[in-house]
Structures are given as C-alpha cells and as structure tokens.
Length: 148
Image (tube, rainbow, N blue to C red; front, side, top):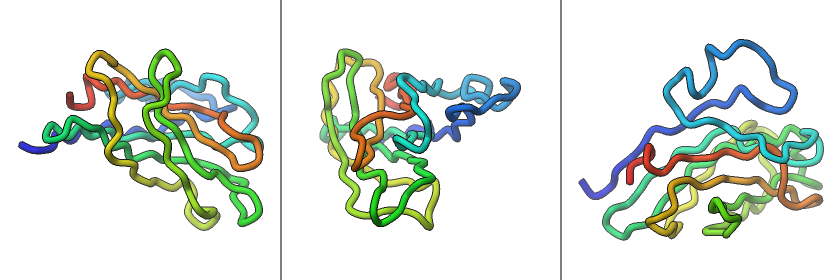
C-alpha cells in the first residue's frame, strides 16, 4: 500500500471554556489527546480542533488535514494559516490561508509534503491569526498511531 491513512480526525470538545464529562473526550474515543497549550480567548486566535495525519511511505512525507475554528472570521481579519511543530519547537511545515472562511466554520484544509524526522514521535499543529500571529488551542498528533 503506497499510503497509510490514519483516521486521527477527532472532533475536539475541549475548546477554551468548554466543560462536561469525559465520555466524548479523544481518549475515550481511542484517539489522540487534544492540547490547548497556550490557549487564549477565542476572539484573539484561532483554535485547531482536529487533525488527520497521513504518512506517504513512497516519499516519506506527511499530509495533515487540519480543522480550524475561528468564529471571528471576516474579510478584514481571519485565521490565515497554521504550522506543524516538533516537540522542541522546530517548524516542519507552514500552511497559508488566503481568505476568510466566515461561512464555513469550522473548516478543514490539507497540507501535503511535510518532512518530519523519523525520530520524532509527535507534532503539534498551531493556528495563526493575521492580526495577532500564532496562538490559540493547539492539537497534538501521535505519529506512531497515525501510520508510520
């Protein structure tokens, strides 16, 4: 099989300020935990609420389908991208968004060809706001579970 697809897509119910029991948590569903490291008010940064990671064993790169929630999206200010970070903060890939997604919230876009060193077991996806830069709720993906 040329591509090993991993269904790591998890609808994260752990957005900033969200509460409830753990029955809908990613761990309860057998998935990867969501991290809200450095989470800030939703009005300042977008949140990454889901990620599907696919490893291409043909060229050894990763593709990430990233679901972003940015309730303040307007043509004047919107979530304009995300980055893929290693555990040490090294940036393995960045994805730019050219326009708002005001009528499509949350929205998912795909980034392909991301080179992640073989010794790296997890990456974190962090969103970017065109006015405030990187921040908000992040999403951590266990690459061992995702198909490598």
